[in-house]
Length: 434
Image 1 (cartoon, one colour):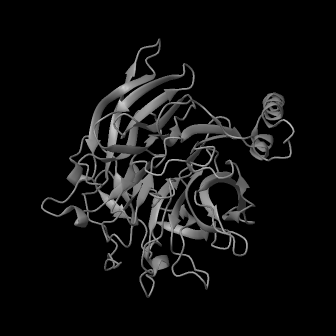
Image 2 (tube, rainbow, N blue to C red):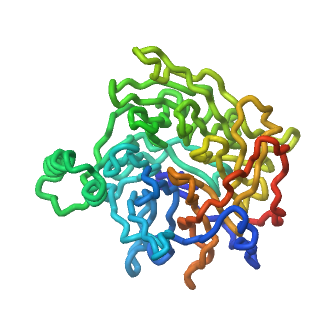
Image 3 (cartoon, rainbow, N blue to C red):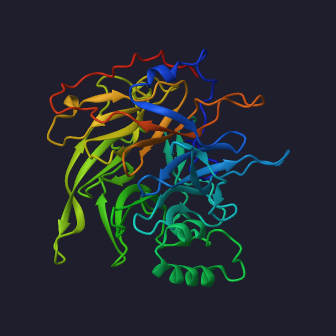
């Protein structure tokens, strides 16, 4: 990711062409993934990524960030916009593509990390500056100041909006009237819009984004950058009481948090050494007693799942980031540069807080040339969606763009309880050069 100048969360492409000839990913992934479909294309978007499903089973909609391809010689937007799109299915009910994407963010704003409300399908949250970001020297995260970087614009807030097309199709009849009234109030004479203008859920000094809901929709996990020390930490917002509670405040970048399916754990990435080498963490939440003991009040136990290789310089260390739980809770998927910084791939890792981290089983999932990352699952666990550079490129493009892909998840028992920890069982290609 690169947005150090543009002040946006941006997923960049590698600075060199993809490996040639391309790796035969169809054969390499056949035991794990099936029925691959490219959902976005370079004809639609210069780049698209960080996509998430709604919480229906099977899924009906996705939310994602993208930079649209400009018309003619017009310059591209400098920041990501936020979109939702309905999933299309063939006669066998397999996902075959997406319908026309619906823009839900404000013009010129910088946007990231969209998420569907788990109970109200027509409502979403995401990080947005709402207006074009102004600051030009905002601190941010950078792998090496060239490849994978993202910025922390202080104007960014966790915002929400309601999408008419989704609410109409999914909202129970007794709630449709209230939804219509809300839309009319917020849209005014702009009632032809497909989504209400986004509004902040709360406003705090400094960057607030990287947000996701608990399964009941009450709590929102997010990353907050304290403007007094520029330290990104994990917080939780109680939508019922409007209370903010710090969870992970250790010095270093803590971000990209998600609840486990049972809401007892969270997973996230962290840069504890301040050397921009992200690693994976899982933490067990501590709960307070508000009558039923269901309010997260902090961290009871934190476990680091991946680690640096002793003795290696920072530039040669593997980066592991964007973890996401499978609905079973037994594993998570993530992106890593383990096979080379020019060829990030998706791996799966066993989730077991009582095992030493080196003993956790892992398995390589993707095998394509170029970037594969930001993996997520549908609520039923049947489908994985991720950002990839495996698709065809346009004649004018120097390299393949990042686009959204989807496939059926076939690995129903990837880590049996009796299985010993093993190394990735797919031969790793030679690291790409840049």
